[in-house]
Length: 358
Ligand code: IPM
Ligand code: MG
Image 1 (cartoon, rainbow, N blue to C red):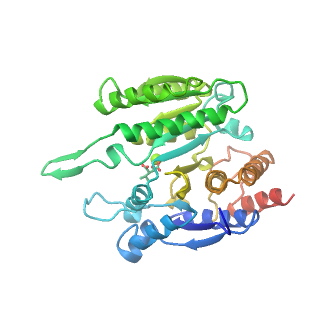
Image 2 (image 1 turned 90 degrees about the horizontal axis):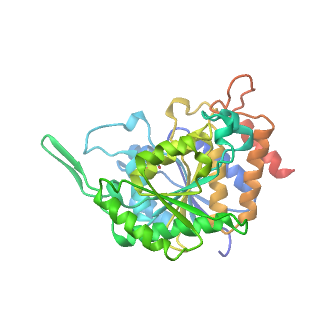
Image 3 (image 1 turned 120 degrees about the vertical axis):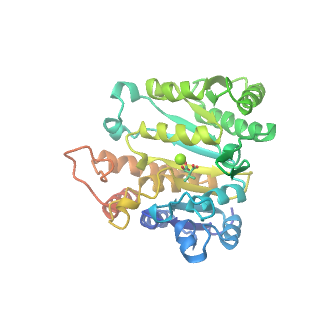
């Protein structure tokens, strides 16, 4: 990439603007970036009647990367099929930018193992990556209502499965690096019931033939949900279709003790801009109070530096700083388990900036 990286910033709704502003401070400590801040989500519905305008989609397509806070809130919750919804903005971006690969790494910070709902000996050693297909399946199939009946259709093509499977196998290889550990992909489906899942299993099996060095296991989604809590440390890369990946990634995220810690990257074709956002939502109940946990957005910015800009060293600096402030005992309200002092967004950000400075 030549010149100053151009980042379209979509703060969104709820706590989105607070955590994104904090993240810009962190990025500014690492170099020069050109920001183009735009409306997307509920705020865009209020301003323009739609969650994502064509103009904003074009700006995102033309950027080097997109950094997103969170979208949604009770103000826009509705079951009226004709009313605009904030989430449509996010889905429109994923589809419109061709972001078919969603990477959600789950690595409990050593200082937070005590916050996990699982016993420490069970969570110890957990370090997994959910690779979720993001532009297909039931999220984007034909849907509608006819009188008393509603339907959503799940469809997958060989091409869609093939490319996301390759993303997963490549990621597994990369994660193993030169460690000597055998990389593993766990492919999740519901092949005992769904035709799309049988195609999924067939295609993933075929792709595995090109990756003889990577172990492949298939799990049915209900079983996978159970195994994730009973033996989380045995997973390496978890590969799944869109809806299963949505559900399993929240479950996997909670293994770390807080959804407030998990970053994500959504990537498309080689060289195209990616979208980086925390896995958590807009937390409207605590918006505007200055207490939101900005760490997942910091870590999403780290993923942007690594995957979007090829700046792995800067990414690692953010990750190390986040680990360090947690090690110092700093906890936002969502992470605090009792007697620790709670800090707000500003103090947490200042502590990370101090680490980056030091
Ligand atoms: C996610 C979210 C979204 C999804 C919603 C907000 C549409 O839950 O990114 O996991 O279902 O994909
Ligand atoms: Mg989700």
